[in-house]
Image (cartoon, rainbow, N blue to C red):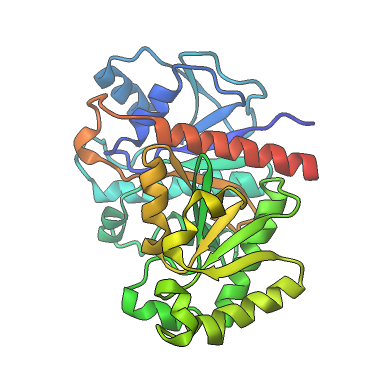
Length: 332
């Protein structure tokens, strides 16, 4: 099998992303990892953190095939638009942030990288710069011409995918249509097979209403939409269990015998996952033609440059991307 290679984007330059990249480079990664970032920013932040990190400049025409040594970090230099200081947002650098994402995503499409791992961006400052931006997920979907993507968060022992994401609660029931539930379920199933190497994934599906509607007494969405849709998908060969009451689904009795949970909305599934693995969880974008994982936290502007940060989520994001790429390589 050919060597694997990965891109790492540090996200908002005033946040903790650059710090995470530098702290991570103190130990050897199992695969070549290339930070797509400003070399001057990393040099400045390393000095502020008191880290002696060797920054090894690389280009797309000369990418490494072996991991960097401990204390070294491969860098594809991507210049800032203006100097960046810890905790101080600068709208002109929004273009820099998007350039790093474009280089990483296009590099995956072009076969230079086998996956990309992203540190947090600051959506507000990108929009303040006059660039409409709703998040990594939507940006990468547009870059890769992907119609439908699925957000899945994972920590050790639990994966939770979402039918709907950032919607007001009053809009959720209307958004759960047979078409959306079909698309999300098929993407989740396919990526568990093709990117996680699970031959026959078993997926637990939450009901929307308390007690999964209690036979229609607490809402009819389960009877009218969810169950008929799941039945049709089962006929296609998907192993879908449910709809189950969400208040009892997240127990060992059920979770010990599944590969993922499909939740109907953001705050139905993610509080459980974050309680179990906050700081050691990963955000995975399913449905893309590339592998993309991310940390489960924000830019933490107040902690940038202090050294008082935990690399746990980034380490899990890297570990997950490596596992996905290895599984995909075996299948291919």
